[in-house]
Image (cartoon, rainbow, N blue to C red; front, side, top):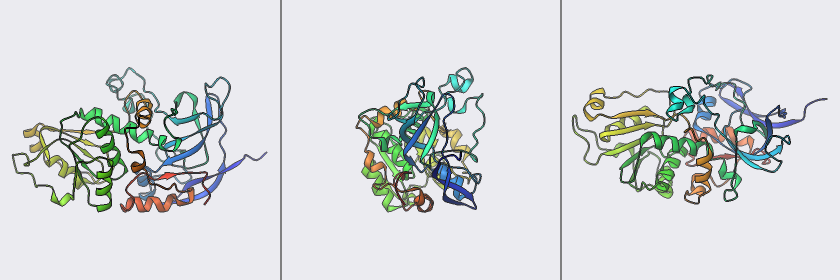
Length: 344
């Protein structure tokens, strides 16, 4: 008997995604079948496709929410339950795990970014133990922000940012906007955003930035002194080497630069400035050891401007390629949500 088919946005090679009919997955032992409600397009998806890192035949998309379609009686889940995927736990005993950073667990296998089977499709299987229930206060669509929100909470914890700190955010795309919104939700309101796009600068104000500037208006740092109005913490969210270099120059003594945006052109840092100012540069890869639970709670708390963080209209699977190209050009400010069940 032939397997039931479902639509999926499949990477076909040469930097292209096409909608194909693929076999609907069948849940194995300890798994449930989830019908995808929404899946956000992440910056890493752009890199995988537009820079041709994905493996042909792979299905991307890892920022998803959905509804349980099928589950065994001993899974702890029932059809109709609303869920998001949760982060896989680390070993719990290695050095990174003991520091609350299981995303870089020393016992974890290397991620297969090229052959990932994600959620740009109608149905996805997931381990029953790796799901988080969506609370009643949170709609299923914005629940798809759980994964990037968990990353944001991890970045803020690594930065040890606190109310009263002056904060710089470079890049006001979907990642930067979420950083801004979560900072405000945690009582940090002195937030300056550096962003070349006027549309994205306005969106940064809409989600809580105190002020916005174009990158070329940032003060060039003096040789051995801080700028006139330095920052305690900077979050680099654009993935551009020039933005990371500029952010470092805006930091005060004992300042911290957190690299959140992915990019493939490495920045060049002034090591003398790092030494004299005792600066820290930290990469924020994924999540805290609490997983997605705190992110889901924050999303359901009513303290985040959820509608401003997402584009107002969902797109079908057939619109993924165009949306990726527009996101890469900076034409779309907020998170694009793909609705696999939406008619093309």
